[in-house]
Image 1 (cartoon, rainbow, N blue to C red):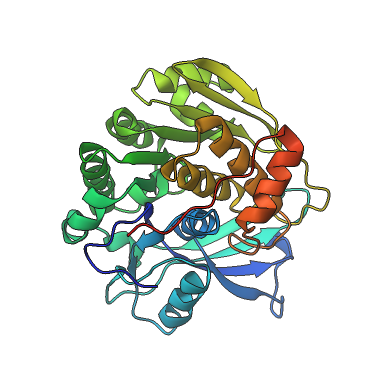
Image 2: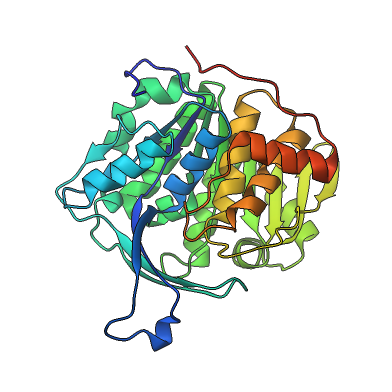
Length: 334
């Protein structure tokens, strides 16, 4: 149900929503007549959908366009349980990308986002969301959002400061993309955000190499925690996740998925699920276990939001894999 300006959300997700055009044909072999499917994704929508499925009252903070795909895009987000009543509009097209994927994890992307509505995100939008941000339990945002434009970068920093200052949890995923930004720019933004984060999620080797000069997960975790992040989660695809905090470093195996289809958005599914469960009061280890289970289940679908597992299914897999307790029932925030 749409919320008002003074609604207290469990999770707010600040970022970009994209039109997704998905084909099973390798991009280098795509030709006239290649079949494709339209869906909607982007790291912000993927995260928000996962957070909502994990039981959190979730809203999307984004700027969308005025083209013919905006209405179905917002309907899709709403069907995924995400409140889109606070989304802003810009007289620009929505960003889009072409995705080619296969079950082995080989993926190719072509993006169209220069001058998109999402890239107009700015501190003025954050100002308009001030009450939401200072009342929420958690904020998720990313390096992709910060790399869209100079104004988007400042919006990310401003939102993180607001949530952190109000005592909320900030989750940040650098999600380094060489086509959007360079290592120096990504590191500069990370240095501003890391001291504000309760959870910093990075991938290895891609993020670790670009942001911490290493492909060793343990070294990456130590270097990124030194920037001020309270907890660092280093993902490695289907390999164990490394979790580093003040208590030490622990490895968390990923539950196996016997029927993988497409890994697009799996990291976002982890981030959204783990942040939601932390916002709802779960211990860190349990939130991470549920995040890993949800991410594993998500690779059975095509595209970023093709498979968003329900909490009961996620909890069952996590319990079978690690023996954790089923999360207690939660009620929406008042």
